[in-house]
Length: 191
Ligand SMILES: [Zn+2]
Image 1 (cartoon, rainbow, N blue to C red):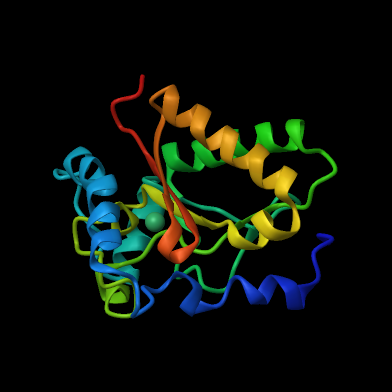
Image 2 (image 1 turned 45 degrees about the vertical axis):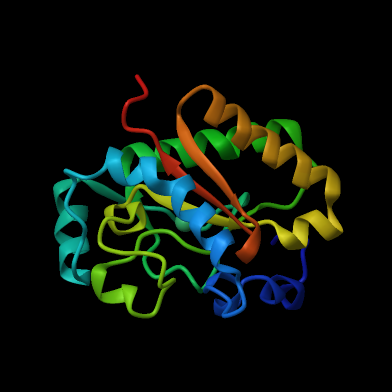
């Protein structure tokens, strides 16, 4: 079992951590929207999953895969559906591999958000809409605040990995300071 105590974990995986805090200034929200605008363009022709049943059939078709807890990934309770597109699951696996290599003594990567259905949206960040890549199995979120404060080295390592992936054109990676979240979305144009 991971070395971070459960109580500590809970501190940064509660729902309100990734919901839009009421006091986020409008200009910060606009910046966040700009940062994810390209993702919406990338996936404008991919259909969002509307219901849990949609996810189930996509799993059967092999379009989505289940992403389970393992030694290096902690799927927080806040994750509505621990499923991702096959290619996004591969990206997560690659990130985890690099993380294991560069920070072998470290705990694990916490994922607090993955795939949501349109039905789930009413409970989620009001910034999001049907065009959000989370509704298409192509994004996940990592909370960084706990790491930044308690494990600054690990924080830097993980951030660097994500920045490298972005530089290579594999992902869009947005540090959402207002909600202390790294948002990661797969770039479908990467070959
Ligand atoms: Zn996100």
